[in-house]
Image 1: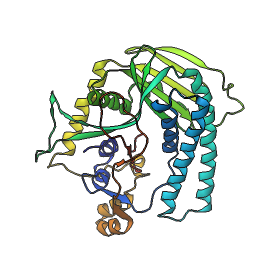
Image 2: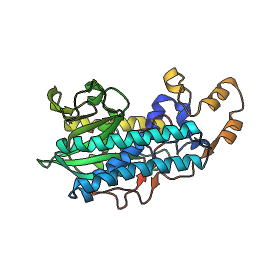
Image 3: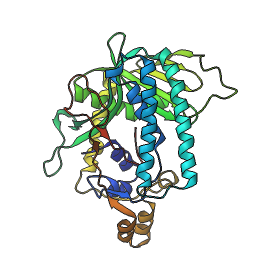
Image 4: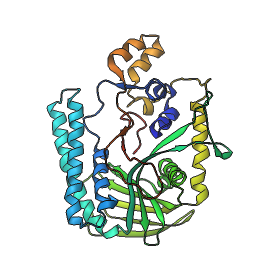
Length: 354
């Protein structure tokens, strides 16, 4: 089983991947890296707000439920951290500030979304596995040297149907400051790979991707009024790109050609072939960007200097005890899909993707 965060980490640093990947050494730090994951909590709120089973409900009923989901997620994360580490006063203050920030963000987002939501949600927080195909043989699944099939585990934020009954994959993106460049959205590997996997897993056709961006900010004095909506139609490689935004939120709808999504299958397969190669060489890829926030810096430095990395791993790390899927969390399936929907436990270290 290969997960998106493992693919990302493999491309960044094979040593960090080898230490943390579930099919490899499966280590995680004993001490959690953060008290809370703010984007995860916002995602939990949006999962409730767009839950298909409540889409016909009045939004006045759903909004407080979504805010409650955000606060509940923040409390759960803080509780998980406090169960393993002592919470400092500064950490508690940061948690409280982000609860206030997130609550305000969501309240403002719901007002904005009421003007731009022109679709019906079909799925939210959907998790599923797809067979990785052999390159050049899309009908044949990739296998390991000992004959095991190779699967790719995917989480999709949301799939919606527009007024023309065309399906779109939606990516919620929580950004701290400026908007992502349009070219970055056009080439976004995460949304393209998720789209390819969804079409394979659900035998469907996606018209394109929608990037739903929320800024971690409050309205400033120099910002346009929140009710001012900027609408643009921009030329794109597969048709017109529609973009709607104000100072705090932006939504970019990008049509995608079928070939653009289908190319992601061979790309994932080529990477997977390297990862399952019995003769794979494992080595570090040091750089300021990769190493600064890496959860495995200490044992990696010890390995490089000939020190006792095993002692560090035994005292500061542990084998994972949690499963990928946490049963009983929110999820919805439309069409053909897995029998049970669960919520994935995202990897907290480098390469995490939401």
